[in-house]
Length: 124
Image (cartoon, rainbow, N blue to C red):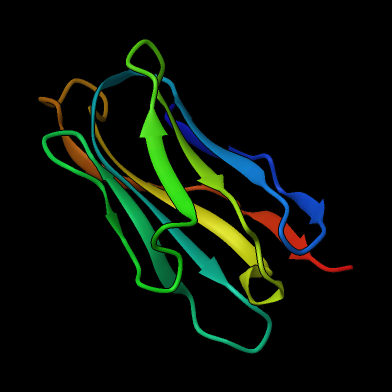
């Protein structure tokens, strides 16, 4: 069974840094894309950044220059390095992984998986 789990959230002061991880486990044949999203209280979920296996990452304007998405080739894990954090970055952060997996004996194909989210709080 494929699982996607986020970790690395926490409480940090304004200007501080955190590194979030999105780890995929199970019978995975490949990672196509991994998107990071966030949802602040009372707001809709918004897109933050996307790792693209075949190209350059993309970023929302609100975090460009402060956040960096990356992946270690040997791992099915994508990281979101967040620097110069601001109070408005406070939210639950989710990752959505588009993975090449298989259900039962069917041929492998791409499926979307969401993690459970990790809380990031930026406050003094």
